[in-house]
Structure formats: structure tokens, C-alpha cells
Image (tube, rainbow, N blue to C red; front, side, top):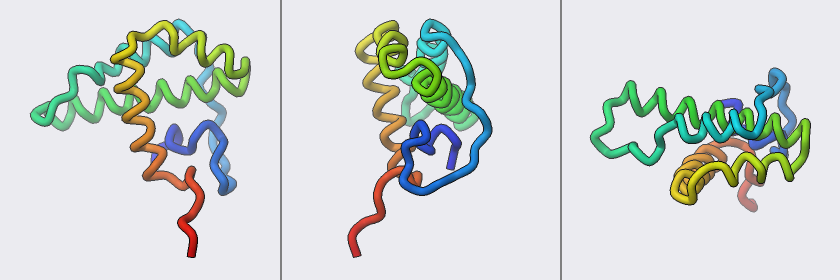
Length: 109
């Protein structure tokens, strides 16, 4: 599981992670755009897919760091700098990453 998938430190299980990446809202938006998620296709070569998704995960880590340092308003400032389509692609990927992490509560027994 990636550190970005830990969910901005909001997970229900404790974990020890390295400090978050420290970027400004404009830089975080640049990472989201640079992840080129809108260009992902079923036939995207595996190395490109990994590079682009790793960039998106780095953006998520930086977004979490921004939230920790400057609060939710700074996160919204960063997200308003990307297009609606880029935001949807980023949110879709991050939801999938979070679903594979221990961020969510364990299912009822």
C-alpha cells in the first residue's frame, strides 16, 4: 500500500509514516495535472501507467501535507486550480487507492 493511500492521516489504524511532502497549492495542482490521468487508457504501457499513477499518489501525499500544514481551505485552493475532469480522474484514482488501504473501517463481523 502506498503512503498516500493512508488517507491524510485519517485512517482508523495507527501508523508511523515519514513527514508529508511540503508543496504550495499551485505545485500540488501541477502534480495533479502532471499525472496525466486523463490520458490513461487500457492500452497505456505499464511503465507509463505506473509513472503517472505514482505522480498522482505523490500529489495526494502533497495534498495531505497541505491539509496538515494549512488546513482544508488550502486544499480547496489547490483543487480549484485543476479542471473538473482532472479533479474527477484524481478523485476516482484516490478513492480506489483508499479502498485498498486500511483507511476504511473494517467490515462488520
